[in-house]
Amino acid sequence: MCDDDIHVGLVYDPKVSRRMFGVLTAAAAGGVATGAYAADVVEKDVEVKTADGIADSVLFHPAGKGTWPAVLIWTDIAGLRPAFREMGRRLAGQGYVVLVPNPFYRSVKGVVATPGFDFSNPTDRARVMGYRGAMTNAGIDSDAQAYVAFLDAQPQTSKKKKVGVQGYCMGGPLSFRTAAAVPGRIGAVGSFHGGGLTTKNPDSPHLLIPKTNAGYLVAVAQNDDKAQPDSKDILKAAFAEAKKTATVEVYPAAHGWCVKGSQVYNEAEAERAWAELSKLYKAKL
Image (cartoon, rainbow, N blue to C red; front, side, top):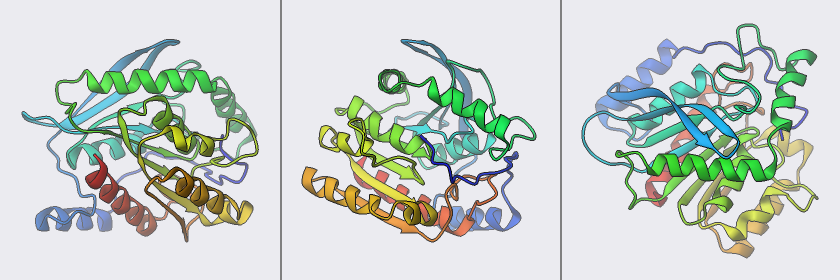
């Protein structure tokens, strides 16, 4: 679950800045693998049947004929919203079939972070933490299996390629769980300012690493590292013992830095993390 120092604050409908638009345009023109995405992407709202109901989700894939590796994106505590749609669109433009589900479908449909949503507001915070509390480990694992099965059922998905999963904040541990729930399909895991990756509980996400068959990128926020300085070492030791390929790095940015719309969004470090994720997917999927 998200830690108590998330500091997301107000969340708004993010737009690509003029400077970032120039970066993406230049990268696309030069064919640089910096995460630039093409405009020719198909986006559609879909419903995914799970053991506990129907998850409202959004699916992206490159336009035209062909098949591509699939990727599942777990959102942060503020749920499915424009920032994650943009993320899915961008990833699809790089050549992936992408599913971004509403993780809180058991409790609410549609956008959770409505205008004025502020995680630092006790009422907003209690509401979304209640949604998260309704997600049991068994339910998360079942959801993961349903989402991967949905991706595999798409004609655009290459079944010969492994599936990637990436998560933000609470989505970090959910990505670890996904890799363990569908070990035969998940080939790469990206966790960005993931909360609670290492705990003293018997269900700690890091204890699932031996059950997985994936390469990992774990991008840690500097304030999370300050709060739990031994977590990165626990992760590195777990990966080494399980003989998994993994990069665990503390970024000079605050918890929540990768997601547009948060008050701590750090464009430069978010782009660096995205570039590392792109390298992982290229190598493992």
